[in-house]
Length: 178
Image 1: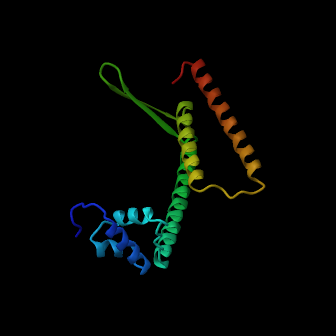
Image 2: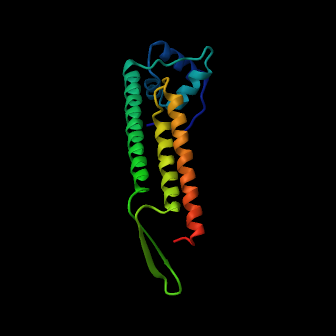
Image 3: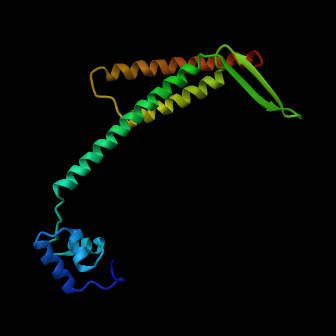
């Protein structure tokens, strides 16, 4: 257990340097001197020249294992987001029931369409787009020669879908909308 805060003396600095020279770790020195690890780190950083605590192979292995685990989690999340985007995209073309509450009596009204109305398609496409963007940020595609062509194709599809939704909106507005 560490003592209450006390000033760092020259004797403390000398002891940290001596223990460091013996090959002690930062945490070992902190325990021996009854000081916090951050205090020992500050003393080591301010030493002339600064004292460097080498991390053992077990720390390097643990750090690498953590990096690999996090990469796997990011890849899995990216995959799940891509699957979610595909499900959202498919909903645009499925039978859809639209409902609302309103009026003086807060009546419930619903209408079923063969496919999602334009406003719902736009919302689904926007949400699918966000899922795809997040997926690509988590796990960018491998760079290859077909990347430019794929971007061009996706851009064309996006423009076509946006045009379709605009046309649907205009048609719905012209017909009085449902």
